View 1 (cartoon, helix red, strand yellow):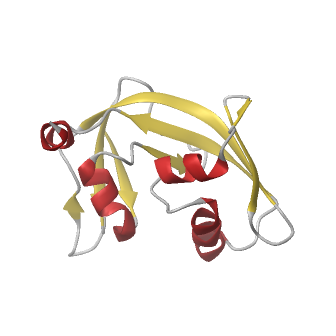
View 2 (cartoon, helix red, strand yellow):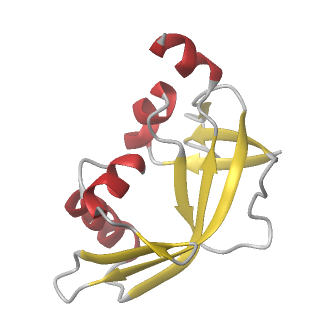
Length: 133
């Protein structure tokens, strides 16, 4: 099992099942497709809580995000394929749009030119599937 910690702002999106991906730095212990993921917020604090039942990792793709001089996102390429719609990609990642995503990245990582990492995807949590029915 692999535990992933999330900012509290993503709690509802993960619980409701419309955020089913995350972007992370490359790490030797990144999950692999088929791994069970535990999704948390507040990890390593007294406020730690699980966001949903365990989910299964469906894919791990290389990702590159290119930022413009203004700090906005100019381009996202996942597994060699450029995202056609930056706003749609950002929504899948739990943001209102690509400007919201860029602002979050600036806040957490400072100004970047290019970010290289992995896009971790998972299946919708079972409780989200029941809620959507």
